[in-house]
Image (cartoon, rainbow, N blue to C red):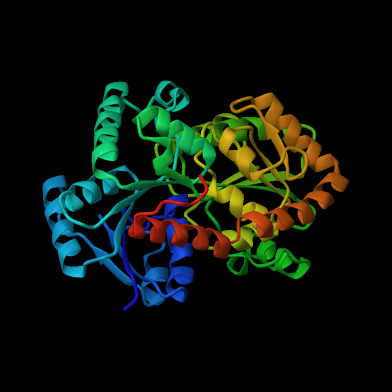
Length: 390
């Protein structure tokens, strides 16, 4: 009988953590694992249909409050008898840890972001500092006492989580996330022309793409301000922002209107055709203020598109400055504008990055290697022998 792994996540909404889980399910099943995905809630947009149509066991908890969710999840663990429970994102971490308490089922938690760094706590006006401290206290207590092992998506996330949550470094294994290069496809002229025609964008436009939900973290307001500087000298530049609405949507819309950038910037909203958008674009820009790894950067790397991104510890694990893109100081609008302008004017650099990025992706971030790493981790937890290199 194959090992059954129970994957608990908040939802399958469009996002990096959600995409990473969905990408991993197929290779795990091919390895003889029986994945069961459990979501705390449904999502209007995202990956539910993709998982369901692929024949995976997908379930949703009916309870809406923590006590009911814990009881319901505990019942599922007893019924399904999984080899382990894997949790992703705080709400699911809390439910999964409490539900498995006292049972023999080990719990593995994915650490997906640098959640408790000062850049987030002090910089994001949408956050309440005292609420974040309460969350960190609860997260740390349940992590230290109710979690058997941790998976960090990057060394930067491992270091941040060890420091913020007080967990032992030896209990954290780094396995970089991966993406399916077959799903991303190739960037050829025919595909580029077809996608651009569908978007109403001509071949003479220098097309910049950003992918991410509308959140303060993603700093898309800073990107719009940088593009305004660039557009003053390069009238043929345009920016597409693909991602669902969030706490920064109003600010983005206001910035576009106030800077009179409505002819240069388009908010596409949620899109299920990100690989096609990458094939149509000339440049991918990722100006985040903090990141755990940056799933959208992985997809841009795999698509072989030139990249400008924030110089963050996690992003440096994905990109080599100069070799796979240009890294700029987070939040530095003039530096971001200068990097975009350099990409527009330096076609030789862009051409070199296309091959470099595709090669680095295949070497380090393919879904097969990422899934093998996760499977080794799960098997080590089950055997009680965490012998994976940290």
